[in-house]
View 1 (cartoon, rainbow over the protein chains, first blue to last red):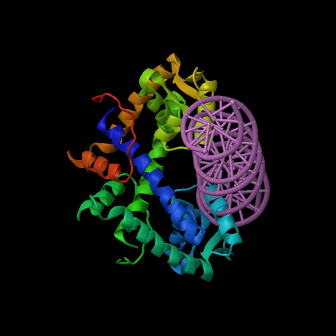
View 2: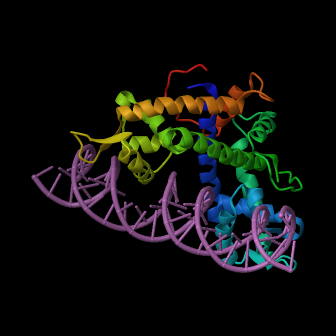
View 3: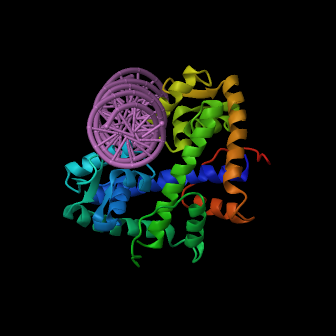
Length: 152
Length: 152
DNA sequence: TCACAACAATTGAGCACTCAAGGATATTTT
DNA sequence: AAAATATCCTTGAGTGCTCAATTGTTGTGA
């Protein structure tokens, strides 16, 4: 096994653990999965807190079908609502509700804290996280929502 | 959004893309998903090419249930077989068949090549991959099967 | 020796997706 | 103008898991 495959396998394992931790923390405190959180975050970063579903799918790296299915439960609990486009009957927007905006704020805080707890202390030194982020960006870890940096 | 959460989100995105690429390549050439490949690899690295299912679950970071379900199709196509433990009736072993061993060899070669194509060239310089592997190890990217390093 | 806790595996139900198909609508081509 | 093609979204079916419940077996302690 070469070092490249080793790194790919490590990435898969690290991600699985990380998702588990985020799911647990966000689920416990806010009733959201990590995937839900990412979806809300993309909406939160869009103008007016709304996006066409097809754009949301592209932004999340999912299919349209996946977005439809993910939005269902979030609409039902009132975090997201559906809006038509007056000019194009094919299009439906997904928009954050006030409750959704508030839930996102709290979840973002919790997620930020969990991320900091994972990536600070112990062996993590000053340049590590930017270096890691750089490598992950090269590997396709792009398309994150534009957000003002929140300093912890 | 702080830089720690940014890195975690990038990891999730990078992984999704990587899995898609491995699934596609391994599926096309060998009829295996990336998850199937990882399972076969764990068996390949075990003494005699066999492990208790409960140990396989732990090694893969899955539940016993997940392993039972993943092994089903692989048993049906003859890559893996089930063996009882003569001393403990609770236990079932998952063992690579000859066909499974051969499939694994081919898949491992293809996976190694894909990984190399992802992580070499362009922006990747000499210390990058070991550094990335180190960070991922810290994040829980451990438990990979012991394999003699195959140099490409 | 016996009761019960721990262990191993499986199965039903549910979550989180993809792919393919299909319906409706808008755009492009003829 | 009409036909062909592209776009958007949803739904059925399938993949890949987890959790909870269940069954059967083994190990431990009284």
